[in-house]
Amino acid sequence: MRSIRLLMLLSVFLTVASCGSMFKVSCAKPEDFAKVEENPPLKIPPGFDAPDTRSALTIPPLEAPEAPRPADAPCLDSPPKFNPAPPRRPQA
Image 1 (tube, rainbow, N blue to C red):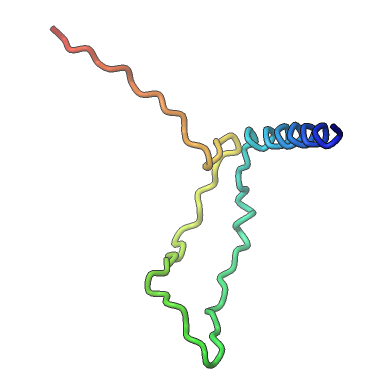
Image 2 (image 1 turned 180 degrees about the vertical axis):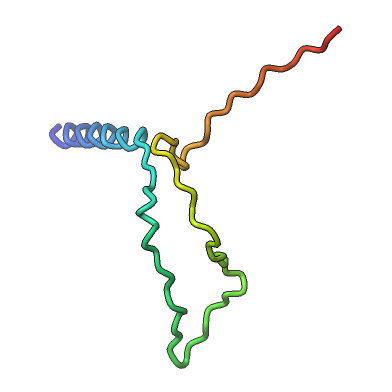
């Protein structure tokens, strides 16, 4: 009987804990990525083959600084609001 109560309590706790993270919006702040540095190329020890990098993605260099975003701008992780225009009625 005690194990059933413990199991029910644990399931309620996990359910409540997961609900808090579902509605939380987490936007990355610009300073999170401002100090990123490029890593040096991979050094392969003697006797090992280098990985195939022919299909690797290349990130082009940034030519212009990023445009500042207003403080009240929505998070880029969430889609923008979209309200399609009502359909136009044909004129008779």
